[in-house]
Length: 187
Image 1 (cartoon, one colour):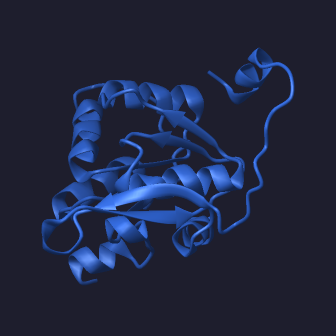
Image 2 (cartoon, rainbow, N blue to C red):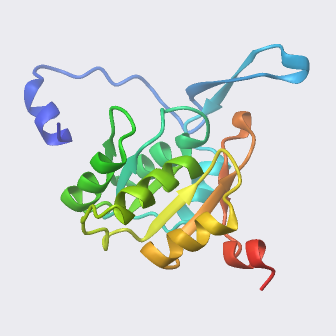
C-alpha cells in the first residue's frame, strides 16, 4: 500500500505529539554484558543514521527494499531512508524470486541483506531468473562477513555496488565505506 493511499483512508484531526530530535524513537534490546538482556532507548536522529544518509548518499529519489526484519542492523535502512523521505518497500518474508520481481517492478535502488540472502539472490539469477536489476545502485550486506567468492559473484552480476555494514546492535550499524574489494583481496 502506498503512503498516499493510507492518508486517503483517514479522517479528522491527527494528533501530533511534541517531538524533538532527542525524543525516544525506538528501543534496542541487546544481550548486554554476560548475557543479561537490557534495553536501550535511541533518539530519533542518531549519528549512525546521519552517517548512513551522508556516506551512502541516500536521497529522496531512492527506493529501498527492506529484506530483513525491522531490528538490529536493518534499522539503518529503514530510518536512513525515511529520514530522507525515500520510498521503502517491505517484504513479508524472504524469497529471492520475489525480491528480484520487486527490484524490477518498484525500481529498487538500495537494499541490505545478510550474505546468505545475497547467495540466494545470485542463485536465483544464475538459474535463469531474468529480472532487470539495473536500478540498483547500492547493495549492502550485514550480520556476518561476506566471503571473497560471494563478493566476486555479486560484483560480476551487479557491478561495483556491493558494500557492508558493521556495528554493535545497541549502536546501530553504520556503513563501512572503505573499498570492500581492497579489504577482501588486499589490492
